[in-house]
Amino acid sequence: MNEYQIVLRKEREYYDVLKVKKLTDVEIWTRATKEEEAIAMREYAEKHGKDEMRDIVKRQEEKHARELETKKGLESAAPAYKTYMAKLMEQRRAQYAEAQRKFAIKQGQTLMEEILVDARKQKQLAVIKEANAKAAEIRKQRDIAKAQAAGNDVAPADRPVDENDGWGRGTMVR
View (cartoon, rainbow, N blue to C red):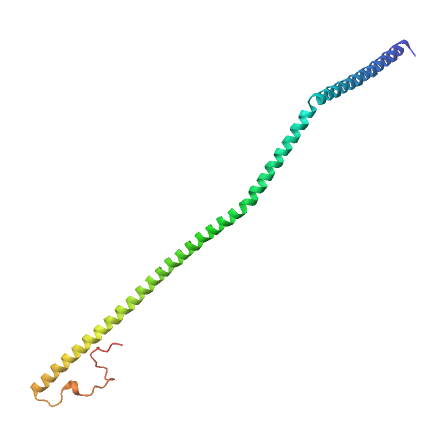
């Protein structure tokens, strides 16, 4: 081996020793830090542990009390909800009854209008029939008066009328 290689090997060994020494220092420092934290934690626990535990227990009790209160509130809400639904259903029944009443009135008015239209038509027909009967009576009286004035024995209105002769006066309304 030449001298240069020997120097390189020594430097490598030196760096390896330094590296191991640094790792050892880091391990020692880490362990010391952990131990210091553990000691600090023990001291804090000795001083404040009972207070912290009391606070934790108190918070848990408060949480349980709130949960119990919520549960009781929900249990007591069931009858209120039933009452609310009963009122709501009563309102809906009233609205339905009102809608039925309005519908019945509307249908009744429509039917009444149809009945009135039919009644008016029937009345008109009755008036027309009555007017035709009066007109026929007047014509009969006139024909009788003409026949007597002409000296005929049988008046034209007294003669039998053939219904199929096709020459009616258009007074028949059916």
